[in-house]
Every structure is written in structure tokens, then in C-alpha cells.
Length: 533
Image 1 (cartoon, rainbow, N blue to C red):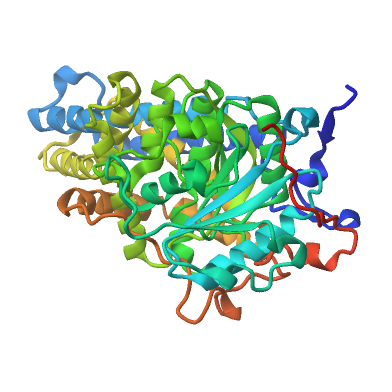
Image 2: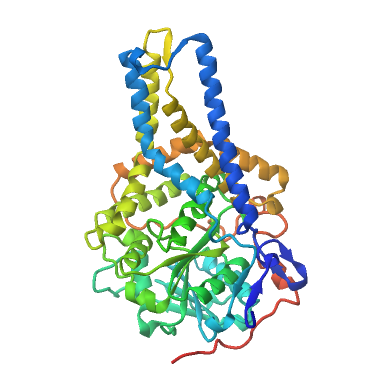
């Protein structure tokens, strides 16, 4: 249609050298949809076949009893106990199956009417304590260089900080982008009416009208201090708000495309890509927040954010993003999936990873018991965290019941088709999530085919170790007290970038390298023009 911009696949994936465009990967088309379905079916099929083969080998040595009336007491305890202990996993693989087969949000091109976002200002808001000006500056330098290649977009970058950074924000930034960077300093004596703490306090301060240049019709894109934009995410944000200006959107984040400090924690985070593709995309296609909201790469109109507010209170301040999402749902706002990719680091140490997960777990449980939210928006979160909390107990009980079955001094062994299929579906869905997630989390272009295959297969094969780790983290979270908002370290002691041995080849640690070298990369040297009031 006339006046409609069609963004085709070169911008959503790969490199368009003629235009100086670079994008992380293309994981938003129908190829991904088919690949996800095939992955799920193959993993589940392989899991079931493996279990059937195991049963066949066992029955060749011992007598298999298919009639439960013939089982001994120990065999009944072992079989039924294992089935009951695995039942909480059923909703997990149901969501995986539905999410993999759900076609919403997977298109080869984005089409939108640019007039619908004309004169709207897009604020990319970064919240930081200000303890790491090197990292903040590096992030701003890369992101502003990328944003300058979108002259049709009126944008600013807001750094909301507890320490005044001043010129540290502008070092190395291209001159035409310097005046687009705004620092919002949050004074130490600032208090919200409800005594909100941590990141939510800073977000609430920035939201108040006198501290920002935004109008209620402008848009805010929330980022962490190390979050790197990509052309696909910028285009996806424009298309999303052109179609759904009053919805709250979030998108996909990868952790292994840039420099990797801790390979193991990055592999563990691969499952988050599958969660985005399956659970988050599915629920948001229905207008729901997927049992909460993640605090990075989520976008919202300022008027909507002011209505919901980040003044969440001290009790749930360690998980303000999820609370914000559920409160917005309670107030009647809809959600949507943004097609596009951003990049972040995984935690550098296992202890940081454990503390990050502990904050999530303890924060979400506080939200679950918050009487300020209606039960209608809390019960899906309760179900999700009951399942997550059951992981260590499921693993422990399955081991105990399996040993109990072996402890039966009998030449017979019970055979339960129900247990076989529950176990096959559960293991297969878990394998599919880690395989599919790691395929997206790592890049052939940056790692090379051999290393890429090793990382993908290693992540999938290491699923039992990951299950053990998640069990430990859950027990650690339940056994320790709330330690507040733990900020994960995202900078090495000697600077913002890892040493050369940990950097990826072909300059992929800097997605703007191709942009700064390309003379055809468009830039807009003018200030963003205000529209509306």
C-alpha cells in the first residue's frame, strides 16, 4: 500500500554491505518455525526410542510385568512415585509443544505505515548505578552509531544513573549523537511515595515529568547497561508501535554472539532463547505478559508507563519488571511480541548466575503473595514457579524411587507405558529447548562451524548437569535470605571488553564496526523534532 514501508529479510539477518547494514541473525522467519518443530519432534522421538530400547534390553534380562496387579509393593512405590514426581513437568512440555507450533510473530518481512509513528520520539532508556562508566560509554557509543543509521527515527538515549557521569557518557560518541544523550541523575535523598527501592526507584524518578523531555505519546525502550541494539530490533520496535501504540512489547535477547567470558554460563542461558520463542511469544500473541516481564528489551508508551508506574513498593522492588507486567495486565493493557534481536552478556561467574536466579525466584515469590495484585493475574505465575521450585525435588524423588525399584529383590521389573511417555516427553522437550536455544544463542559466523557444533551439541548433551545446577540454585534460593538487588558484574577488572583470547573473530564483538567503516551508512545530524504538544 502507498505509504507503507516494507522491511525485507536482508535487514533482519545477515549483512547488506552495500548499505553498511549488519544484523546478528535471522531467527524470526518461517525457517525458524519449521526448524523448531523438527527439533522438538526429533528430540522427543529420540528420547522415547531410547527409553523403549532401554526397556527392551531390561526385559531381555528380567521379566517385565505390564499388569500393575502383579507388582510388588516396592515396585508400585517406585513406579507411581516416579510418575507423581514428574507430573509437575507436564505443563512445561505442553507450553513447549504449543509454543513451537505457534506461528504468530514469525514473518519474513515487516510492513508498517511510518505515518503512525511520525513525530513520535523513541527514548532508549538505560538504568545504571553509575559504578561502571567505561561499560556505559561503550554501550552508548555502539548503540548511538547504530541508531544514526535510521534517519527516519526520532530518538534519544537516556542514561538514568545514581552517580553523575557527565562527559564520561560522551567519550568516543559520534559528534552528531552527542546532543541526543541525556543524563538523568537520581539524587540519593529521592524517595517515592511507596518507598520503592533499587532499579524501580530510578525508573520511577525518570518517569516523573520534570526529569524527562518525553511526552505521553512518546515511546520508551528499556535496556540494561550492557544491552546492545541490532538493526532488526530497531526495525521491529518501529513496526510494533506503528501497529500497536498502546501495547507493551518485548523481544529476543542473545548472549553468545559477542565476546563470551564464561562459556558455561552462556550455555546455561541458551534455554532462555527457547523460552522467548515458545512461552513468551505464545502468551504475548494472546496479549498476556507471560507470567511477568523481563526488564531489558521491553518497550512501552510513556503514558502507559505513567499509568502503571514503577512505584511498586519496597517488598517487590527486586523484581520490578515482573510486577510491572502483571499490574499492567490487571489494568487491562495488552502485550505483544517485538520481532528483532538484542545482545547481552551472560553472568561472568557461577556465583553471579546463582545470585541472579535467586533474585528472580525470591522476587517472583514475593509478587505471588502480593495482595495488591488480583488473583487472576497471579495464579499463572504461581503455577510456573511451583513447577520451577519442584525441579530439585523431582530429580531427588526420581532417583530415590528408581533405587527403590532396584532394591526389590525380584527377577521381575514393572513396565508402565504412562511413565515411559511422561519421561520421554519431558526429556525430549528439555533437550529440544536447549538444542533450539543454543542454535540461536551462538553464531556460525562468529564462532566457525566446528566450534558452533561443539557448543550446540555440548549444551544439549550437558542437560543432566544443567538440571543438577538448576536444582542447586533453587535450593540455594530457598535456603538463603533476600540479599536485595544483586547487580551482576558485566565488566572485567581491566576494562569493558574481554581480552583478545575471549573476543570473537571478524569484529563481531562490535556490531557497529561494519557501520562505522561504511560511508553509505546514513546519519541524521539534526535534533529530534518534537511533535504533538
